[in-house]
Image (cartoon, rainbow over all chains, first blue to last red; front, side):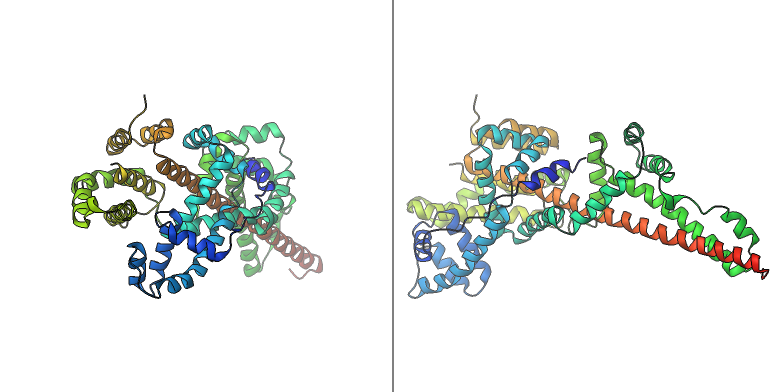
Amino acid sequence: MALEGLRDDLKAAAGPASSPERPKGSRFSDMMQNRTSEDSANFLRWVENSGTDPELARRFASDSMAAGDIDKLGQHFDGFEQRKGKVLEVAGQMTPQQILRYAENVPLLQSAIQLKDVASIASVFKDYLGRVAFREPAEFLKVENAFDNLKSFREGEFKRRDEEIQKQLATLGVPEGKWREIMQVGDEATRGNALTAAVKENLWFWQRPMDWRKTVARMTDAREKADVERLVNELNQREKEMGEALGLLADENATIRKAVNQELRGMREKPEKEMSFSDASDAVKNFRKTFNVDVERDKFYNKEGYAGKTPKEKAAITRSFNDLVDQKFRDSVKGKGEGKWLEIFLALFGMKVKIA
Amino acid sequence: MTNTPTQLYDEVMKLAEAGDEAAVEKFLSDHLAEFPEETRNQLVGIYLKDAIVREGEEVRARADAESAMLNVVDDTKKVRRHIENQKRIGELKQQLGTE
């Protein structure tokens, strides 16, 4: 079954997320001293997003803090640490088996595994998710929901339902050869009809009550007659639905699995549109016509007096310019959705920004 | 031969602007090792996030479909029982000569 892999590797749950061992005061102090770190950038976002003191974030970023700022930042640090704890908890659920399974169908992940061991990739994911959590909380929420769904499949309501369905499918009594033959049918409607035909003889509740037509014919009470006819029509409708459901749930065959899964996903209303590659490709074309990263970076750096700054200050200016490019590209694709391609191009623009 | 970040960037942009999704995917995968570590890690994170979100959606959708199927089975059993009852009522009426 397609879900067998998931069923197997969900058994190998990741260990609990480890909590930072250094005392809080030291962690705060470390971060304050290393303003170019990812941790510091995330903290800056956390302070910015708190909206309580916009100037505080600016002073922190530019290393020009006023008296009392350290105390104020210390107060934000508690919330920041809690959020980081949540990130570790969510990211820690990614098992090595899961990464290997995803890599089976994603060449880029296969390449990554050739470069690093799976444990290192899990660590990369943890760092990446931390960044997402502070930059794009909605995207982080999607990951959190996905893990919740997988957890439910492992031990909650979805598990119970899945077991019940597996039991139902196991009792259908269709010979294995016949089942496999039906699963080869690519067209969903035809597959559903074939399944219904194959299973209905084996399910007592699909068999029509004997002589019901004669019974109806004998009935003189029009209301009762209409009632039985309505029920039989309903049964026919249920039979159709049963075939459709079976067609969707049967995942014996790898060749139809992908299409079935896509269809299942399509049946659910998407909370938001995902940007297609085609939209992303057009967006990149248009963006590069109006925004030349090299030219704009020179302008930005001149305005900020980049040349005469310390390495720490230069890093902060580069980060600000990266944020600007990020925002400009996002603005240019507003309404076209989010997703993988948007993030890939943002990462590439980020790389371009940092090319000296 | 190893590409510089500029060459990598230019090549991906060229393929992207040509609208060739498969070529972009292949290029990123084939040249992953050549990307600066920060970008490489971002790409790995993006693909992993995409995979987990997709799987979560599929599991959720499958659970919904399973729920729908169980409802269909339950409804079907109820409908059948109702038909059988009606049939039985009809038969009894006949036997009693009330129909």
